[in-house]
Image 1 (cartoon, helix red, strand yellow):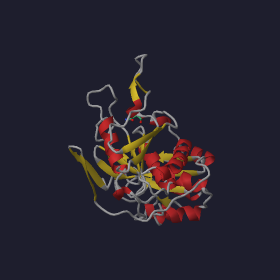
Image 2 (cartoon, helix red, strand yellow):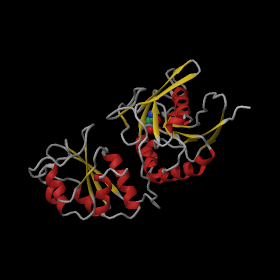
Image 3 (cartoon, helix red, strand yellow):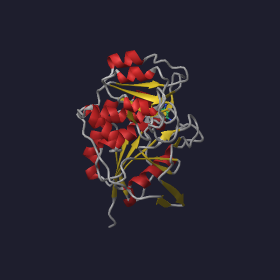
Image 4 (cartoon, helix red, strand yellow):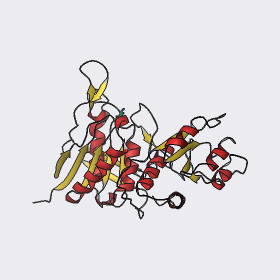
Length: 321
Ligand SMILES: NC(=O)C[C@H](N)C(=O)O
């Protein structure tokens, strides 16, 4: 008798679980999708919550991480279905939280089950194929969409409606394609050593501010007064208007500088007032390659672990994530 592989499928909602609501008021998550037939695979379903992903919070991410850590040892792979809007935040939170050897793969859909272009079954099948593949182990949680396999640190939603909704610099780390019943899976590089974190909570308040031409720091005072940390989606390599420099210098909480540009690192290059080098001299922490909302997830995690500003700076600058 061939040995059955065991797959856990954790449903959390999103368009992949949505249909038009009976009151005609638009799509709502209603029913978890079933995984298309997988010969030789025993599927166990879990449904910790059913939410549109704009309603998913860091507390849900922690809950999901705990559930995966519990079920992963009894399975060969784990698939998580999730709404696409905040999928990358959950994927990155799980990347930070989990050290399970079983592959964990997130997916979703852009079209719902009653549309002719329903992309749920294909994405689920691909995600299952990736999660059950030996070469997927040790890579941290992955995102599979449209056959592309993405690293949780770099994947981002790049289109509001297209079926190929995910991308992100420098692009997919692998690809799954089907030829009849055979899946072809290819990774373009090997796994790397990983660091994981075990925060007791993700309850800190971290605000994100978005920089623009002519910003004089509107909104900054409120963030400084109420937040445990601030992330700024800054300009280019991490620069800001000059007015922000004294505000950042006077802030005792960690201030992380990400970029609103869609690719590339934050680097302290410029020495004019508000240039990245002056912000770092004033105590700001460059976010490396993380976008602002992922930098926020990392900051929440590190604050939850009780790290101080110096330790937080080290994690971001040494890329211990
Ligand atoms: N395609 C989707 O899943 C979008 C949906 N608004 C969600 O994130 O829940």
